[in-house]
Image (cartoon, rainbow, N blue to C red):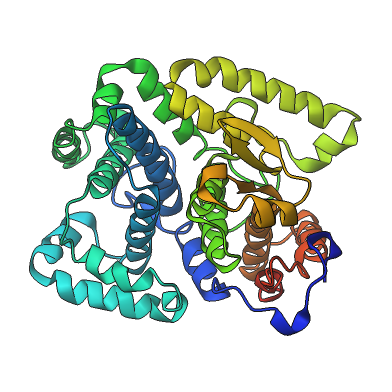
Amino acid sequence: MDSHFGTQNTSKIKAPRLNAGLLKKIFIAASIRRWNDQATPVEFVELDKQAHKIVIAYILAKYEENCGKSVDWESLILQFCFEFFERIVLTDIKPPVFHKLRETHNKELVTFVCECLESDLQEYEFFSSMREYLLGSKDSLERQILKASHYYASKWEFDIIYHFNPLMYDVQNIRNIINKQVEEHYHLAGMQQIMLYENVRELVAMFGQLRFQKRWSQTPRIPATSVLGHTLIVALSAYLVSFDIGCCKKMRINHFLCGLFHDLPEILTRDIISPIKRSVKGLDRLIKEIEEEAVKKKILAIVPPNIAEDIIYFTHNEFANRYMIEHFPHNAASGEELMDKFNQNEYNGVYGEFLKIFDNLSAYLEAKISISHGISSDDLINGAQGIYEKCAQKVIRGVDVGKLFRDFA
């Protein structure tokens, strides 16, 4: 086993609860086309919509905190996961029909969703609360934030479609419905900021642009995942395995958010592939400096301090093992030291080396799933093999994370 993560007692090694079945379901979202009954200038897919939705939810939640509201971040993340998994299962139902069915057959729909996901999620403690949440018994602040972000992400997409072809059948009616749904959430401070201030709208649009930047851009793939879709896969998988390795609540939340934001600078520099970064001495460091300067000027300058602090922490040396003491970041000597000494909510820790494994896992799956569809190339084959050799034997805190790679080999 990989000695970088310490000597492992093989008798105590356990498999992660995250499995190939759930990862395949998550990747299905990259093939679910949205607005497929409309003339669209670009292809919108469900994975990107969900990633954009949770980024907007993060922004809305931060503005609520600025107004003195208390946001339960783990509840927000879990509720997002519940809605995302439900959407994957019920993907063939068009939204107007889905909302109508919810009024009359919601209990049956929820039962069906939970049964479809039971084999993949039943070992997680939170699975028992998924059914209750989807039945919609409580209207919490977190649920309101997710609803608002869902509608605004849909509006962002449809505004592009509308301007492409405003005279198509029913387009004006759909636009009016979506705008009304967004207006119903103007009571949220973040929605007010988005609607009143152009620079906040631009921030949301800036994140949305990562939907148009494709991964492995010089290599045909199926499905052709975007940078933003990739970040959601990293966030979800790292978050779920964080339960297995015993991360505290704050570290679990950080792994989700850091996974979500780790490629944020690529809005401003595009996805520069690793061989180019490695080919010229010092180029990787120079690119980092350019990215940090661009983030400072174009993002940090327009967001509230609490968002700026997060973005700096999540994007600067994103794969370093780190923690905070009184808002000052410190690097841990190793992942083991971080987990042994700073795995408590007060230290705001990020296990960067652990997170990097899931960045690699996403890239590995992007290559392997395309190859399994019959779309292959030397870049995909060699890229997947290189990642496999690096990660297939990883064991972290007694959890055989490498199994996730071996299961797709």
